[in-house]
Length: 255
Image (cartoon, rainbow, N blue to C red; front, side):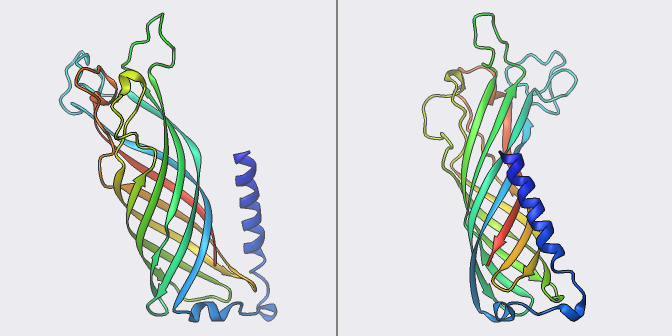
């Protein structure tokens, strides 16, 4: 289903972009009034792929046998934690304040839905245990509220490139931070309140009735999202120093 959706989005975008590259004599400058507005608004839909930047304990000072509880790497210096990421979904709104022809201040409140599977290879699976005892399904719903600075290039007929970047407050609505249970009972906990920075590039395409903007964005968390397990819990979060989300988001924006 997701593959079909991505294919449809890619084909639609390609068709729409190609429609803009016609002979100059056939060109019309669409939605000129859009660039003259002090304030403008819109919305966007997108897909995301998120993973964690992993910092294990004793990464540079691990014991040779790699068996201590605080050791997050094996004897070869390899991180015990593996992860698998599934494509997620992003949706948001756009608010733009034009400063001049090339600079604008923007905010794009966004909700990101994503899921990651963490595989702790240092957890021994006993014969009477669930074979997935070393796996943790981490579902996250991030509410992102950014403050962005947008830099646009010159408009070439009905297209205009841009880059933008900024910082954001990110609230994880599925963090489990306040739960008493930890990984001993199958609950993986992360922080609710987070902060990130981002960088984005895209091309604004002007049609007669709307403006379409395909874009790609990198999203990186500043803070450590990991909530440690209790001291009595062996392995899992207690073998890690930090986890920090990093993501790539592809969006189609409509204004």
